[in-house]
Length: 330
Image (cartoon, rainbow, N blue to C red; front, side, top):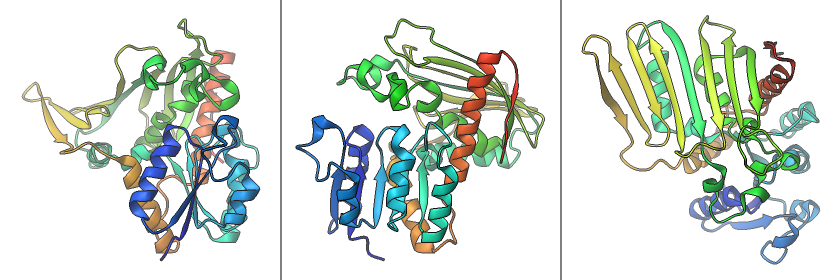
């Protein structure tokens, strides 16, 4: 199957990352870019979605700000273009059903870019949980954070997507990878209790921290998630305490450690031999989904991504109402 024309929408760091991968995978294909950012008019092939649709791409990556994801996706999906939509899928539920309907009618694949699911270390960690490696689980604790000023050091943090509400910023949307993989590993979340706030002196108009507690549909465990934009050390981890020991995934070093209950010590049981390129693996998975003709499901579908968005919306309501909020799963 040939993919002669590819389109990259958005020329921020993630858009450029996708463009590099597309050039690597499709050396003989035409790869065009689209951005409506007025500062990038001289470096893009297209400045309007109508121009890009005339290009008739086989695959498009949507990496513009989240509030514009779905409208952009609907335009391209209606044209029969396979889509990778960067996370989060949106900032609202507007036109969610329309996008799913179009994808079915046009028989196209849509993958939402929660690329952590392509991490070998996280998959190893998940497989141990699935295999009951540490027995009955008692608790789950997840951490994620990085200081916003160090996140994109070559940019004024106040002008980034992360810092601006109108662009879909804030820790809940920007760091929603954690909510996605918590659902992936431990099952659907039935309720959330949350404290969402701006705690630091960062000059932003969105929340910079969130503390969440989840309850699940199919098991009795609870999980806590701390996320922020102000910690000095970059952190991404998941610790699971079980009856027979503890597992610890470090998403920065891509390692998995196990605390043996009998020997009372930690040991490293997985380490990636080289730095993981989860975006490249995401592309390979997406291409296989297209080639399989509906026999391989995308790791994160449109409907799956909207379930993560429902958790985020429930967390915001919980913090405002100061009570536990049940999550509508359909």
